[in-house]
Length: 551
Image 1 (cartoon, one colour):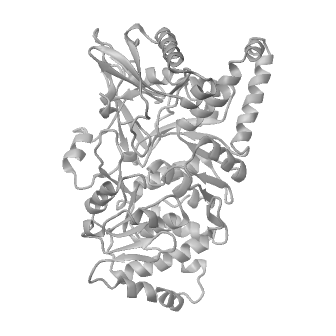
Image 2 (cartoon, one colour):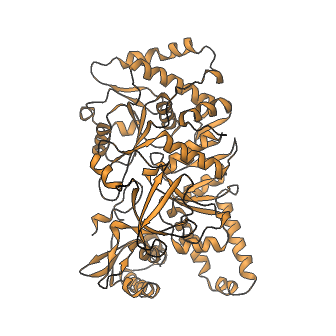
Image 3 (tube, rainbow, N blue to C red):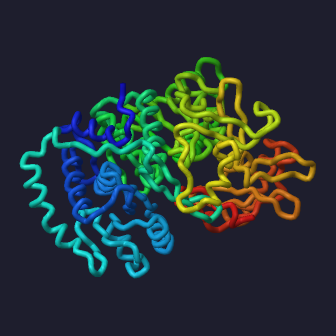
């Protein structure tokens, strides 16, 4: 039976896989074995102890994915302190606020980010360290951290003359303790500190072990932000309890960069957000399917299966060729894209979760044939219900409870009280239905639902998903203005340039898109006009559009 305690998972993993490769930075020579990670953690534990870090004290980390980032995170939680991962995309004022609000006393930071912070605005910060080499970048006046740092090598050498697996011993820390304080980057403009316990994280990790079954030495390519629970839980925390090699991609994960990295690393499991597959579908597959010879071939019995098999083979090769499956999460997957990938039997599974559940709520392997457009079955360690008079047919708010649910929001009793029902269920803010097998079907966010003049609920995300697949549309947003539905569209300028379109051509294309879209949706979902936006919609660091800015 697997270890249930979150901290002890890493004590066991570092011992068992001591000589195996654990962390690598893609495109560099920087790498660590499990034993080398444990060695660096031991040094940081000595530092924390000498500096006087107490159990439960907060330590922040900010920077792109790197070996240093991962080691700082693991050193903090295995010491018994609380890690505060801060998204590197936050602006300096947000970073100042999070460090101060979280009461963080130490900070591990990328050098470039520290250059834009102002220590005088961080009154509780005692010291800051570089993620490059853990060197001291700042100490508060009156502190003696620099002298402590200078003697850590000698203290380590004296305590561990021969650092072996048996030297790896971490304190007994209850799973009920807060391990992570994760600040959300929501679409409402307000960031809250989610208190995630060791039990929340252990629940996700144990589920991953049961369903993915990766083996020691398997490769994971980590390209999701590790400051988010989705990437952290599975690309990083789970992978390092399974003996995997985690290759960290620090570059912006454009499809071009990702496909090269997949080819180079050949990962065993891929975690992705829908945008990656949607871009590949729109830019690579749709143009191919639109050609006349292909249309004719696909209309012929038997030949269509051969063509779909070839497309499937090319896609699998593009993702490295050795992955068990691709896991999609973080946002709803476009229904048209999902339908096509299912048609070609592409190994892809869709899950559902949120930061407040660290993050998983529902998931079913593609091989178990979950219902189309569902987010899989509610986890056994979780329960879900729909706040609706008919949960099977009428969408209502999805509410959950169970092992993965957070403790609450840090220093925010009002927000904590507001997100839980009186009988203790977490209100997700997502609208959906359940089927008899406990599969979740998402319809949209409760805050973005539009009520039509005739009283029907309009889920703008569903209309946008159809519009986003039409020509020359990069992204869209459906809003209500003066009682009518208007689609705001940021055009696909690469496609426009490639096809040599001028302004009048683009207007005609959008008029055609409007006509096409209105034939695809219900009468009450039809849009009255398309307004073009010259710039991308403003987004959160998680790449969700800030809808409240456009209402």
